[in-house]
Image 1 (tube, helix red, strand yellow):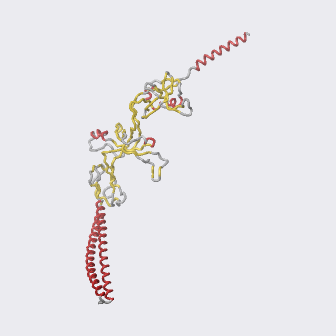
Image 2 (tube, rainbow, N blue to C red):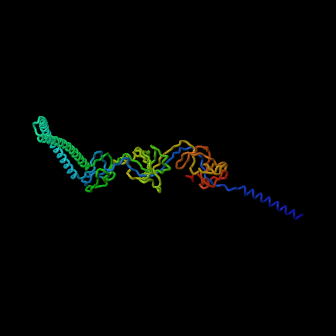
Image 3 (cartoon, rainbow, N blue to C red):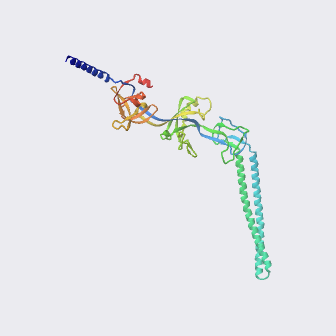
Length: 428
């Protein structure tokens, strides 16, 4: 009996020790260290970022419409030109000779017309005489004065005179057509001669000079000839950027833009969207290239007032601090939300719905008395750092923003958490 009593005492002590240990160790769960940030009211500006090249909004290729050797080139790259200024002179000798030949051919055609009219007048006189003779012959023949042979001869003479008159009339028409053709040749020769002199179609700057004096150019007036130079209006510049298909639907005409040019690292310029491509850049004549990224061209005009101060500080007479081909980064400001509750983007995650494990919901973890509490939220627009919260949070809520693994995967509703010190400084 004594042995059994001792056994049960030992068992009881062990049970008590195990219960205390279970309560001590099992009740203590290791808290997850997190960073938090309070939800704040901010202005959120949604952006679409893209890169591209600066180019003039208006750029004209000066091409040769006739072939020949360049004998005069009074401009050089960088020169300012006004509309109508001489840019290129092509050797006109061949075209002057062609014009002289065309004029000679036209004069010859006019002479032929005068000759044809004289022949018609002569044929008209012959026809008049034959007609009168034929009338007399018919009268005498009816009175049995003339023989049948004389009657037939008179009739033949009349018909010959009539045919000669018709022929002379058609010769005049032919000569008139020849004159029209000759005059068209003269006009063509004059046009070709005028094309040997290339003048500026607009005021601007010579931004590229492809040919030099003494070189030959090719052109035929029907297709685009060789480019001799480019004349650009540098007073209005734009950035041609490529925007991905997932972002292009958010871009609209006249959207404001912020532009950073690699050549001016500390400057930000303003702009506006002026053109949005309707067809993807990877579209070809035979359809779309499926192995390429689908981007669309968007053109953003640089606002002159955003860089006018830079021109005032320059001693040169440049009308723009930008040069065609400069690289630029563009942020298109697509939407704006004023004074809305917002939190860092990385704090938003997804979890399974409490009553439906097959569906997930968007939400955040907020700190409540050392516990991470899951809150479903409705989001709006976002910028590079913050996202708009339309519903689900209050301005005073403290939101768990990191670490990423905890927010995105491991943290659960009701988990104990420990706030990391200096989390705001680490986040910055």
